[in-house]
Image (cartoon, rainbow, N blue to C red; front, top):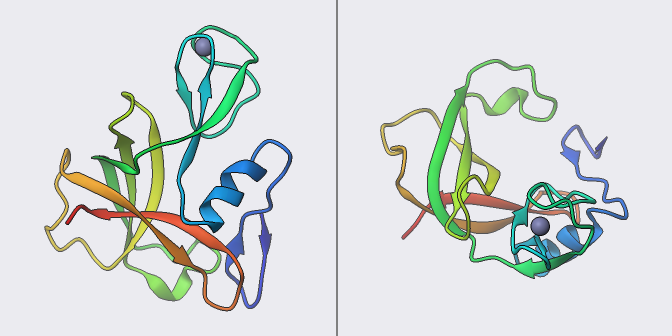
Length: 141
Ligand SMILES: [Zn+2]
């Protein structure tokens, strides 16, 4: 991670994460999947957590899931988000597999609109002033 202009942090892909970010730039969500046992991994790993195979390939995932957890941030301690408080960070469990979790950001305070287990969906947000796209999650329509 590094800081772009003016302060927002953007991902710095490496060999392991480049395929994920390439897909995100095209508006697609991908996760690694073990070709031996079918287990999905996110964030990316070099070895399957289930069977320890190195045979992991990138596969598309639905981007649909359920709200696993969320929190409301009030502290101005995260670089680039100082003037955005309060906001919510959401953890979404994709339909493909239990505990296949993706993190997202939702602007705004806790307005009672989020309930654990509610259907969520991915969308893609371009970071203003950059070429960077991020996957985010919102309540499913
Ligand atoms: Zn495996």
